[in-house]
Image 1 (cartoon, helix red, strand yellow):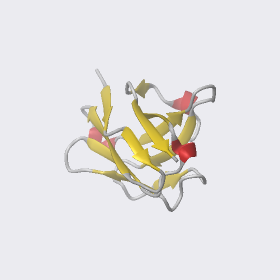
Image 2: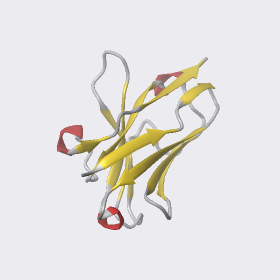
Image 3: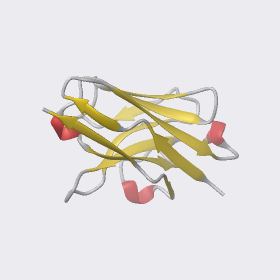
Length: 120
């Protein structure tokens, strides 16, 4: 049974920062690539970032590159550090796995999502 649980969302002013966490209950966590996606109201779910099983490779959407950082923790956690947040970053953020793909339809497991709201 694979479970993913996101936390860390909230309300922040534009220019601020948030750090999201994804707690993964995956037996083979150390060999599993994971990704972050987001979905704003009325929009399709979109790729944000992904990270390889060992953290050596990371991938980002152009819209968040140089502002967001994906990383893996010692425990079964994957993080998304979000800096210089913009109003257009407002969305529900989801952790997904396994995989590195930018297409959300390629992922089998999803968390419940955490809301990020950026105010102007």
